[in-house]
Amino acid sequence: MFDRDRFIEECLDATRDDAADPARRALRDVVARAVAEPGAVMASLGEPVRAGVNLLYRSDRLTIVNLVWAPRMSVFPHNHNTWAVLGLYSGREDNIYWRRRPGDESRQIEAAGARSLATGDVEVLGRDIIHSVLNPIDRFSGAIHIYGTDFVTIPRSEWHGETLREQPLDSAVQARRFEAENLRFAAE
Image (cartoon, rainbow, N blue to C red; front, side, top):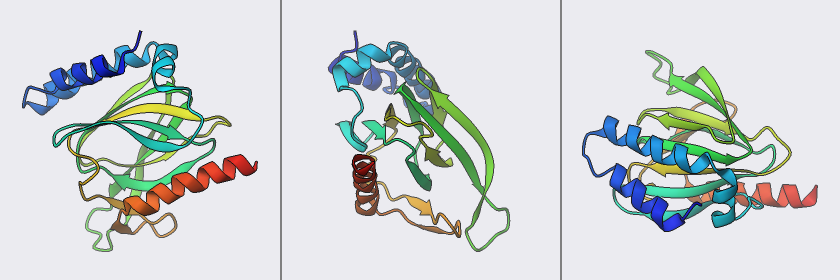
Protein backbone atom coordinates (compact mmCIF):
# COMPACT_ATOMS: atom_id res chain seq x y z
CA MET A 1 0.00 0.00 0.00
CA PHE A 2 1.30 3.44 -0.96
CA ASP A 3 1.46 5.79 2.00
CA ARG A 4 2.19 9.38 0.94
CA ASP A 5 3.93 10.40 4.18
CA ARG A 6 6.05 7.25 4.26
CA PHE A 7 6.96 7.75 0.59
CA ILE A 8 8.14 11.31 1.33
CA GLU A 9 10.24 10.04 4.26
CA GLU A 10 11.79 7.34 2.04
CA CYS A 11 12.65 9.98 -0.56
CA LEU A 12 14.26 12.20 2.07
CA ASP A 13 16.23 9.23 3.44
CA ALA A 14 17.39 8.31 -0.07
CA THR A 15 18.79 11.81 -0.62
CA ARG A 16 20.53 12.36 2.72
CA ASP A 17 23.88 11.41 1.19
CA ASP A 18 25.47 14.42 -0.50
CA ALA A 19 26.88 12.29 -3.35
CA ALA A 20 24.40 13.02 -6.14
CA ASP A 21 24.66 9.83 -8.18
CA PRO A 22 24.14 7.34 -5.34
CA ALA A 23 21.30 9.52 -4.03
CA ARG A 24 19.56 9.49 -7.42
CA ARG A 25 20.02 5.71 -7.73
CA ALA A 26 18.54 5.19 -4.27
CA LEU A 27 15.71 7.60 -5.06
CA ARG A 28 15.07 5.83 -8.37
CA ASP A 29 14.57 2.60 -6.40
CA VAL A 30 12.09 4.29 -4.04
CA VAL A 31 10.07 5.66 -6.97
CA ALA A 32 10.24 2.32 -8.85
CA ARG A 33 8.80 0.48 -5.83
CA ALA A 34 5.97 3.01 -5.59
CA VAL A 35 4.91 2.99 -9.26
CA ALA A 36 5.20 -0.81 -9.42
CA GLU A 37 1.83 -0.70 -7.61
CA PRO A 38 -0.01 2.00 -9.60
CA GLY A 39 -3.39 1.16 -8.09
CA ALA A 40 -2.04 1.82 -4.60
CA VAL A 41 -0.62 5.20 -5.71
CA MET A 42 -3.99 6.16 -7.23
CA ALA A 43 -5.82 5.01 -4.11
CA SER A 44 -3.68 7.44 -2.09
CA LEU A 45 -3.31 10.38 -4.50
CA GLY A 46 -6.56 9.95 -6.39
CA GLU A 47 -7.19 8.94 -9.96
CA PRO A 48 -5.87 11.58 -12.38
CA VAL A 49 -8.87 13.60 -13.56
CA ARG A 50 -7.49 17.15 -13.82
CA ALA A 51 -4.22 18.40 -15.33
CA GLY A 52 -1.93 20.14 -12.88
CA VAL A 53 1.26 20.24 -10.88
CA ASN A 54 0.15 19.18 -7.40
CA LEU A 55 2.73 19.82 -4.70
CA LEU A 56 3.24 16.90 -2.28
CA TYR A 57 6.44 18.09 -0.56
CA ARG A 58 8.74 21.09 -0.84
CA SER A 59 12.03 22.01 0.81
CA ASP A 60 15.25 23.70 -0.28
CA ARG A 61 16.73 20.32 -1.28
CA LEU A 62 13.78 18.31 -2.58
CA THR A 63 10.42 18.92 -4.25
CA ILE A 64 7.91 16.13 -4.88
CA VAL A 65 4.91 16.70 -7.14
CA ASN A 66 2.03 14.67 -8.46
CA LEU A 67 2.05 15.80 -12.09
CA VAL A 68 -1.07 15.09 -14.13
CA TRP A 69 -1.15 15.52 -17.92
CA ALA A 70 -4.45 16.06 -19.72
CA PRO A 71 -5.28 13.80 -22.68
CA ARG A 72 -3.10 14.73 -25.70
CA MET A 73 -1.47 17.55 -23.70
CA SER A 74 2.01 18.69 -24.66
CA VAL A 75 4.47 21.15 -23.13
CA PHE A 76 7.26 23.07 -24.82
CA PRO A 77 10.88 22.06 -24.36
CA HIS A 78 12.05 23.17 -20.92
CA ASN A 79 14.82 22.56 -18.42
CA HIS A 80 14.78 21.92 -14.69
CA ASN A 81 18.25 23.20 -13.69
CA THR A 82 18.38 20.28 -11.27
CA TRP A 83 18.25 16.50 -11.50
CA ALA A 84 14.86 14.82 -11.52
CA VAL A 85 13.40 11.37 -11.00
CA LEU A 86 9.96 10.65 -12.43
CA GLY A 87 7.76 7.59 -12.28
CA LEU A 88 4.46 7.01 -14.04
CA TYR A 89 1.56 5.50 -12.13
CA SER A 90 -1.02 6.01 -14.89
CA GLY A 91 -1.00 6.49 -18.64
CA ARG A 92 1.87 7.54 -20.90
CA GLU A 93 4.41 10.30 -21.19
CA ASP A 94 6.45 10.74 -24.37
CA ASN A 95 9.64 12.72 -23.87
CA ILE A 96 11.73 14.33 -26.59
CA TYR A 97 15.20 15.19 -25.34
CA TRP A 98 16.85 18.29 -26.76
CA ARG A 99 20.37 19.73 -26.77
CA ARG A 100 21.77 23.15 -27.43
CA ARG A 101 23.19 23.39 -30.92
CA PRO A 102 26.99 23.46 -30.66
CA GLY A 103 28.42 26.90 -31.34
CA ASP A 104 24.95 28.39 -31.91
CA GLU A 105 24.75 31.81 -30.29
CA SER A 106 21.00 32.05 -31.06
CA ARG A 107 20.33 29.71 -28.10
CA GLN A 108 18.25 27.37 -30.25
CA ILE A 109 18.04 23.65 -29.60
CA GLU A 110 17.79 20.48 -31.68
CA ALA A 111 16.24 17.09 -30.96
CA ALA A 112 18.72 14.60 -29.50
CA GLY A 113 16.61 11.57 -28.54
CA ALA A 114 13.32 10.36 -27.18
CA ARG A 115 11.80 7.94 -24.70
CA SER A 116 8.23 6.84 -24.19
CA LEU A 117 7.29 6.09 -20.60
CA ALA A 118 4.33 3.92 -19.62
CA THR A 119 2.73 3.04 -16.30
CA GLY A 120 5.42 1.63 -13.99
CA ASP A 121 8.37 3.22 -15.82
CA VAL A 122 10.92 5.41 -14.04
CA GLU A 123 13.31 7.91 -15.63
CA VAL A 124 16.26 9.78 -14.09
CA LEU A 125 17.04 13.12 -15.71
CA GLY A 126 20.36 14.90 -15.28
CA ARG A 127 20.71 18.51 -14.22
CA ASP A 128 21.21 19.81 -17.77
CA ILE A 129 18.46 17.87 -19.55
CA ILE A 130 16.07 19.78 -21.78
CA HIS A 131 12.89 17.90 -22.67
CA SER A 132 9.40 18.35 -24.01
CA VAL A 133 6.51 16.14 -22.95
CA LEU A 134 3.43 14.78 -24.68
CA ASN A 135 0.62 12.68 -23.26
CA PRO A 136 -0.33 10.87 -26.50
CA ILE A 137 -3.38 9.03 -25.18
CA ASP A 138 -7.05 9.95 -24.71
CA ARG A 139 -7.03 9.85 -20.91
CA PHE A 140 -5.19 11.61 -18.10
CA SER A 141 -1.69 10.45 -17.22
CA GLY A 142 -0.24 10.70 -13.72
CA ALA A 143 3.36 10.72 -12.56
CA ILE A 144 5.37 11.41 -9.45
CA HIS A 145 8.13 13.90 -10.24
CA ILE A 146 10.93 14.54 -7.76
CA TYR A 147 13.38 17.42 -8.18
CA GLY A 148 16.67 17.93 -6.35
CA THR A 149 15.95 21.45 -5.09
CA ASP A 150 13.12 23.85 -4.31
CA PHE A 151 11.56 23.51 -7.74
CA VAL A 152 9.08 26.32 -7.13
CA THR A 153 11.73 29.05 -6.92
CA ILE A 154 14.53 27.83 -9.20
CA PRO A 155 14.88 29.91 -12.38
CA ARG A 156 14.27 27.80 -15.48
CA SER A 157 13.99 28.21 -19.23
CA GLU A 158 11.62 27.03 -21.91
CA TRP A 159 12.06 27.07 -25.66
CA HIS A 160 9.46 28.60 -27.96
CA GLY A 161 7.41 25.90 -29.68
CA GLU A 162 7.95 27.30 -33.17
CA THR A 163 11.33 29.04 -33.12
CA LEU A 164 12.99 26.81 -30.48
CA ARG A 165 14.59 29.92 -28.98
CA GLU A 166 15.26 30.03 -25.25
CA GLN A 167 13.20 32.28 -23.00
CA PRO A 168 12.58 32.45 -19.24
CA LEU A 169 9.95 29.99 -18.06
CA ASP A 170 7.07 31.80 -16.40
CA SER A 171 5.35 29.48 -13.91
CA ALA A 172 2.15 31.57 -13.99
CA VAL A 173 1.95 31.16 -17.78
CA GLN A 174 2.60 27.45 -17.38
CA ALA A 175 -0.20 27.16 -14.79
CA ARG A 176 -2.57 28.87 -17.26
CA ARG A 177 -1.55 26.32 -19.92
CA PHE A 178 -2.54 23.47 -17.60
CA GLU A 179 -5.86 25.18 -16.90
CA ALA A 180 -6.44 25.71 -20.64
CA GLU A 181 -5.89 21.99 -21.15
CA ASN A 182 -8.52 21.24 -18.49
CA LEU A 183 -10.97 23.57 -20.25
CA ARG A 184 -10.18 21.99 -23.64
CA PHE A 185 -10.80 18.53 -22.23
CA ALA A 186 -14.08 19.60 -20.58
CA ALA A 187 -15.27 21.13 -23.87
CA GLU A 188 -14.65 17.88 -25.73
